[in-house]
Length: 486
Image (cartoon, helix red, strand yellow):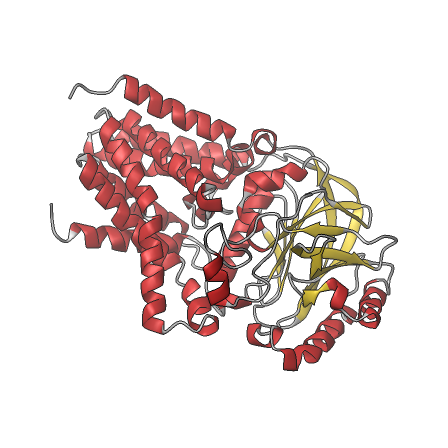
């Protein structure tokens, strides 16, 4: 093995990050994956696993460097230790691409077309596994790089982000394996056909507008993270948020996650009344990010409506490990970290909120990374609303990457996605996954837009990840049954 090969693979993994937002150099994902496919083509299972580990480590380290901001600036961790922590996390996450390489090398049949499918199937399954293993962290799934204008975005309403990743890996590996096998023409024709078909699928309207347009006001409060949790500046936070709410004029007014970073029962009643009056000034209703507590003492990260006839509540169901709760046997971490409000409980209901004649399916922060969970609100939901606070990660790639994830959710569900965030990126996304309007990051403001609700079900909304998972398992099972003699 060439001693430089692991370094080349780490760099090619890092290169893949340029295909995602904010760089959006979408075609670069093909050579980045192609390097890995080239190395996997004739590697032993052990070396294929090593190659996958190197590629994955490079991709995750380059793509998730924003985690260092939270550890260093807000977690008080020394910078060298923060870098080491992200490197170790990246290597741990690289174990799944390593598994994909190992499986491929064990089952390959040395037929370029089938091996391309096999490589794509192994990859899709490990990405799907990453979406639920240890509660799941599917950030940087390769399908996210294919939001519009990529022609592969047309497949998202049918097979979801993991299906798009399957197709992307199949195209990249087919080009490489076909080239090495002397079937350049056939591989290129197949890739071109897949791209053209994706472009055609992207022109299909999977949902249709329902009802009259509603005026929405998405508030970006831009409260610094250190200020949000500072008791001495809490009153200033409240006043700033109220001023922002009074600048919002709409039938639906959405504030960010944890706009008021205390329990709802502790918020002064006159302040809540002032917020409700601001929301209802033009007959509107607002959604406020705040913590709630039930009769048993459980704390929730919630979205609460104000200004309407009745108060409605949505509580976050998919919590962040260590940030919002401590897994079993990790209570010591909770005591050590001293993270505010890090002992939360999961919400029980994902029922959409009834606001301004629309059924609004709320998701809080990184809940929108889990596409199969969001489709549970369909077909009832007519709008999607993400409320986030990414101030923990400073001026980093976390914000544009998260916006790109929301774009994929809009594609999968064929629903508009509204985003109200603290520091960015507050935006309106069309059912086609296109950003129709967005506020500048790290500026206080209100994004006003006229939006229509949509109804109808995409194929992905009907079956979720089932078709991709079953298809990928079928490819692996067929390869295992027809495995080459040892």
